[in-house]
Length: 125
Image (cartoon, helix red, strand yellow):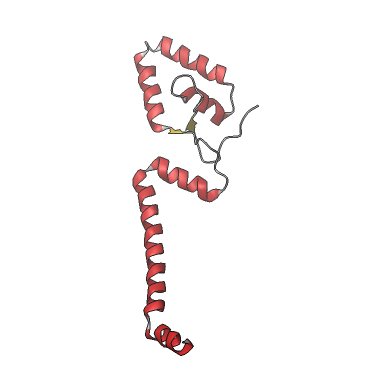
């Protein structure tokens, strides 16, 4: 049974033999893994190993690893891509979330420490 690929891209498979590049390509293009691996072996043989080997390693470095769990919605998928593409983008997202929470907390503190709040507390006692 084939697992449907994510809509946003090419991933290295976590269940591949060597770094998951061939299985990731097979899943992305909806080919059988056997044929992609056979093509890779033929490329290794006819190029004298090094050119195909270097290309394979470059692809392994460029391709993002497949997520452990499939994202359930757009927000989860967007977060995975932001983290996998750039950790600085993910850090920026966490920083924005923190700044939004801090802004909300300041508004709450302003409401609680305002003179109207104190006046309402005294009037209720």
